[in-house]
Length: 129
Image (cartoon, rainbow, N blue to C red):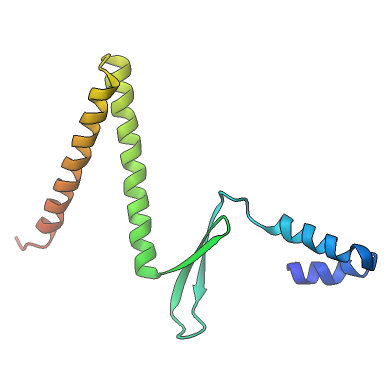
C-alpha cells in the first residue's frame, strides 16, 4: 500500500477539522529517523541513466553507479581499517600495557604505511609480467 492509497482510504473517516493534524502525523511517521541511511536505485528522468540515491536523515544526494561503487569500496576499506585499529589499540594498550599516546602515534604511522603500500600495489597491478 502506498501512502497515497492509505490517505485516500482513511481520510474520509476523519473529521475535516482534524485532517491537517492527521496528515502531519502520518508524514512525521513516514520520515526516516535522523541518523538513518537508505540507498535505492533510481533512473534519471533527464537522460535515462542509472543513479544511486542516498538518503541520510533529511539529506539526499545522487551518485553515478561508478561513484557509488567507489564509495562502497571505500566504506569496506574503512570498516576493515577500524577493526584493525581497534585490535591494535586493545592489544597494545590492554595486553602489552603501552601508553595510549604511543598507540595513537603507532596507528597513525600504520595508516600512512597502508596508504603508501596501497598506492604501490595499484601501480604494480598496471605492470605486465
